[in-house]
Image (cartoon, rainbow, N blue to C red):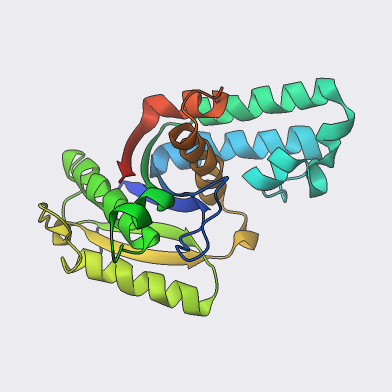
Length: 242
């Protein structure tokens, strides 16, 4: 029988990898891997998220999306009209992240610096993915996952985009994307990409979504107050490039 890993990985990003039209206000691309043990995920993380949704919305079909929460859009407009509710909501949301037993692995690309320093720069998604996979491999090997099947869950962006990402992912896993001085053997683990639509309401994908932007913002504006980042930081391994 297939020996599945004790861990599962959920991936999301903040910003976009486009280098031809860089937003000067937010010239960032951040890829965030949330690595969780399956037993902790099913026994603690998922129930905590479900209870949070029941408390504030009465049902568990809500998808927690950082952008909509931050802008108080859609179902989150309730945060605009009741300051007491808003404060309670954010306190509980921060507690969800704080109490989640997970490792966060992040690759942050300064796109403006990338195009300035390199004549033919690599695609930021490709760079961020390789950086995250390098750290993920080390973490899994250190936790006894050699040879096991590890599912890496990505939010689906469409058939074409998913296919392009899968090609890069599989090249990394086949040791064809090593970059710089490192030459890691990704075949020590059996990585498997899985693409899921946002509408599947995956707790893990929502967890990853909530981590990516705070990490990018701390890199862009290190002096700015960033409570979300402070909560994530003890769980975080981050590589910034260039």
